[in-house]
Amino acid sequence: MAESQDKTIEFVRKKDLILKRQLGQGACGLTVLLYDSIIDEYFVCKKYSPINEALRETLFNNFVREIKLLHILNHPNVVRVFNYYLYPEQFAGYILMEFVEGTDIEEYLVKHPEDINEIFTSVIEGFTHLEKHSILHRDIRPQNILVTKTGLVKIIDFGFGKQVFDSEDFGKSITLNWWCEPPSEFRNHIYDYHTEVYFVGKLFEKIILESQIDHFKHKTLLGRMCASDPSNRVALFSAVRKEILSDRFLDIDFTDDELETYRHFSDSLHSVTSKIEENAKYRADLDDIQTKLEDCYKKVMLEQFLPDNSLIMECFINGSYYYKRNIPFYVENLKDFLNLFRACSREKRNIILSNLQTRLDSVVRYDLSPSDSDDIPF
View: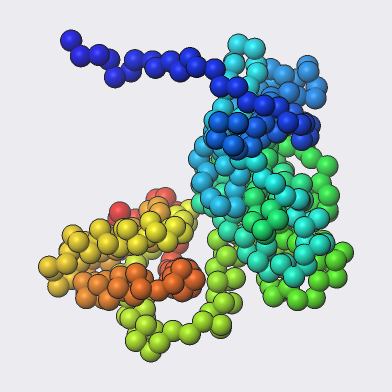
């Protein structure tokens, strides 16, 4: 009789780490620095230890939620989690995380104002990754964005973080002592992606004004991030990222052949896209997009045009959409674009993707109850 695949495997060997020093105490956790002598590495350990002991049981689910969020995330600008230990019966637990040896973003930029543009871009990259996974940080302040000695940004402390899936999740369920004037949506008890953009914008605005930095390249964009009224604000970090990448286009040259290849592909993709569901998101991982394009090409390389236009659309759109069945998408355009994408530098590929997304922004959005029988839903 075969053994059950659900058999519990117990790791009973105790792992001893050396306590080096205490790093800090937050509302829900005490953090300490630990050392592993076997692999010669330092780790941060966050112990569940609420300041108000009477709330130990009530806040325990927040600590578990932080662990779940950290395990979803994997990005150079977001702190890494390595392990966790939970003891639900005692409402106790520990998170073992990457040790980020650096200073908070405000302190770093006071000493290194010349790095403002690179740091801004890295912060946007990190928050775009959170947004991609439908995660709100909800505690954006200088102490929660660290920068290492080499200029690497790390977003930390997801104790107030939350994964959201629909508008009901955007309720402002937390009350913090904010370090700047709150945005106008707080009056309606809303905290959403617009709000995250606002607080990141206000953080950089504060640093730039106090340090009198005059060489920041994205002043107009930053102003739109800081608008109190969300209707006047940049809606998403992905949109901020897109504008940053578009600005770089001026400094990077594309050959006439590269531009022609891109435009043929862009025209084809736009022409077959009928509608995009309003909550659908664009794919942002360059390697993942290239893999999807390669898989798509392998499936159709012997054809003249794609037998199913959804094959190419799903390479760029993560969500629901409609495509036009009566407009052919030629395989030759896919082949040429794939060769271009493979050959370009990472920065060029980012610009290509940003421009494609701008093109798709012009496609009609729809809610989840479409009724157009002339289109084929995916």
